[in-house]
Length: 328
Image (cartoon, rainbow, N blue to C red; front, side, top):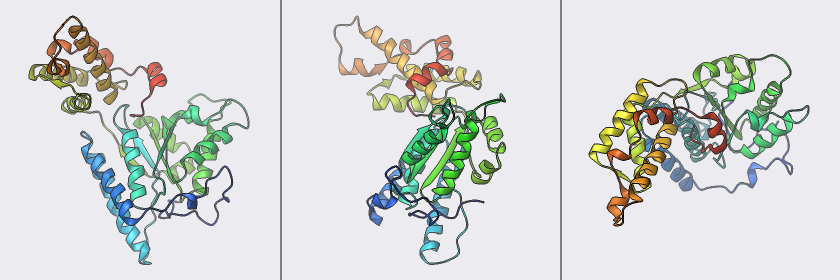
């Protein structure tokens, strides 16, 4: 069953707090004004994201629903049961982690989570290689996420396709138990490719009963990829000339047409941005008179070739594992 509307304190059947389980009461209470400020900042950050109109609409609808449910709760009126546990479906680099982080602060601003922080993990962070350690790893991760959001990327990897000895199921069973134990102090968001996540949720009745809220993330369109690039440039004091902008848009259009499951979306933009400023640095290294304008202007010749751009558009999973920045 979906969990009841989250409360700001633990339920009566939760395990008692001890040295390894922080007490929710130990988190300083925030005033209504402080909570509203957190909420408004989170919603503003959501609005500033490039694209994702469907995700923004769904998050705002959920926010409004929770606002009304909170008011009904305060007035002693009947409430609709709601589960905040969610499934984020979509390709890599489409902003899933970013949206999860924003939602954690929205839940805090609405008074449903005391800390509103986000803990990100994956199979490696939950599953051990020998008996008796997986449950301990899951407990440690859950404890760190209490009063916030636990984000599990590529969650479908917990159920490997091969049969045989594997502790992924133990991780799932332990996680489901802790989700019930701390149902008023923990929101879990699982994320990954759409098809794999559907199989993952259907693989276990406990998962299917607890995760009934789905958010579908799509590939960014060429114009949106360009806007993300320009935002990165603005933050790092770089601007594109009109000609460079046209060249870059053509690169993104070519990438979009040839996209597949490995297309990295936001990660692709980051890779291209890094390669672009490297090429600019090579161009500037032989110049003697470097004004601020020269240092901050990107020209068409700084944009990687189409072939190099296509290579940058692929997700290098080995590299990603070593330098993951949290933008899923």
